Amino acid sequence: MSNLKRFIAYYKPERRLLVVDLVAASIIAVLDLFFPIITRMFMKDYIPDQNVQAVLVWTGVLVALYVLRLGCQYFVDYYGHVVGVNMEYQMRTDLFTHLQTLDFRFFDDTKVGHLMSRIVNDLRDISELAHHGPEDLFIASLMLIGSFAYLLTISVPLTLITFAFIPVIGWYAYTRRTAMNRAFTEERKRIADVNADVENSLSGIRVAQSFVNEDYEKRRFDSANTAFKRSRRKAFKAMAIYSSGLGFLTDVLNVAVLCVGSLFMFRGHIDLADLTAYLLFIGYFLQPIRRLISFTQQYQQGMTGFSRFAELMDVSPGVADKEGARVLPPVRGDIVIDNVNFQYTKHAEVLQQVSLHIPAGCTVAFVGPSGGGKTTLCHLIPRFYDATGGKITIDGHDVRDVTLASLRQQIGFVQQDVFLFTGTIRENILYGYPKASEEEMIAAAEKAQIHAFVLSLPDGYDTYVGE
Image (tube, rainbow, N blue to C red; front, side, top):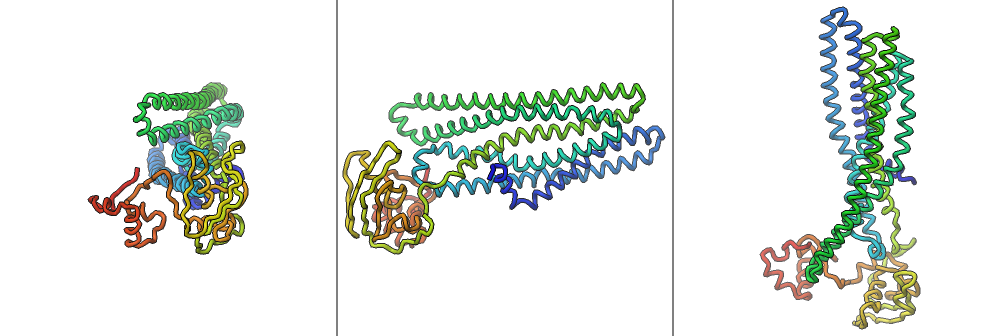
């Protein structure tokens, strides 16, 4: 499925609100066409005839129409953005949920800052595209068609000359879009590097300060930040070339209409009222073109972010339940490691033909130098990684034949690196088994020899901890 189709699929839950938003936007587009039409009526009929009653009636009609436009504009500005916000929320939820399924190997090879950038920064522009994209395209189409139809009623030759500029404007927009796409893609990569450096430096701030390496961290951050600044300037330069060029072409169109229209008036093809109305309508005719310019910019920024979102969503977990995996029944803990091999990369084998039998109830300690594979071997049992050769069984069940959830729920694991989740001490202790009773929680704290310390805190087990 193409990225555009995947993006459109997120509109499905919001389709009703989107339809109402587009209806309100179309009403605004139609109402915007009334002013030049009524202006032409005033100049051609009511003012020359000094028809005061008609002037007052149509003035009241215009005021009523603008009140209606006010309500529609409020709906579009608020509920249109609600559509975008809801889609951004769903994408962020989907991405976070997907990240929870990915294995250790993925996180070994990916910087947390890069992931944060995709979850936060990239999806923010998608919200604007989700709101303004369909709306700008829909309104621009209506206004182009409506303007073209009415301009034809004033002067066919002048309208054909006007629309001769459209292919030129379209060609310019198309040729500059590729440069914008490259520039904004590079900008996304650079801000991800900045996020990664910030996350890395702040996470290791205690180590950096203990080694008096603050200047080194500043230089490293400045390098990433400077690269982002340059990429952002290039992106804005590409956008400026695009916008200013299109602005120049629309200005030339205005001048051409004014010049040719004046010549037509000199020859008696149109009168002053028609030329005035035509010039007013050209302003409305240029509005959809400007909307399309704005849409193109938003499309490049939004779809660049969505492409990075989709790229991450397409990453398949390296460790997952195989088809037909069964739930692991309660086990005693008889572990057999049979001729197991493992390597993190193709050229670095960590474990070679390791065989070991650990009977249920036994305590086994792995002793050896750092990097010898002790932690790696422990990680293979709950399938944080999959062995590249051999097999591991628990009570005769191959760990690859059972579901990950049922396997890991029966394994207690104490990580080498201590991590406290944001929340209370109680929530952290219960993290591995939320259904545990108060007595079970206290028993676990006593085994960890922290019960007395926790009770000495003002809020006890409800003390807030974390980063």
